[in-house]
Image (tube, rainbow, N blue to C red; front, side):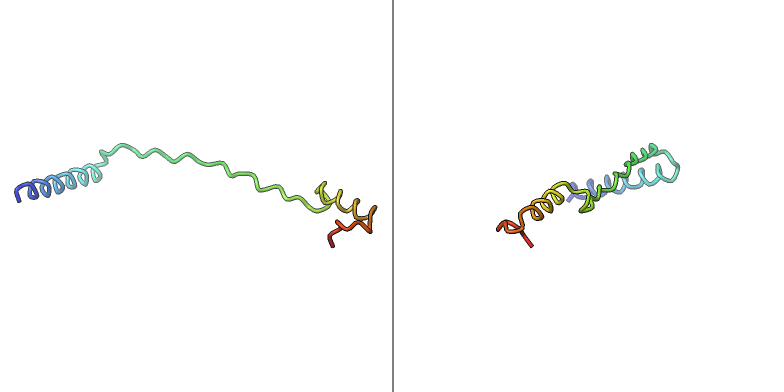
Length: 71
């Protein structure tokens, strides 16, 4: 029982001391968070800029009977 009383008194004393320090401005200043640079937006590739797409179109155009043609 005495141990619990000591713990409670210690908690109250610690709270009061910290509260007093905050009111008087005795706490160390908070470091500002480092600013993150906004990342570049993802590069959007249009179908006419995509080499694989253009290569597939050429293959389909040159080999219209090819069974691998996806439509």
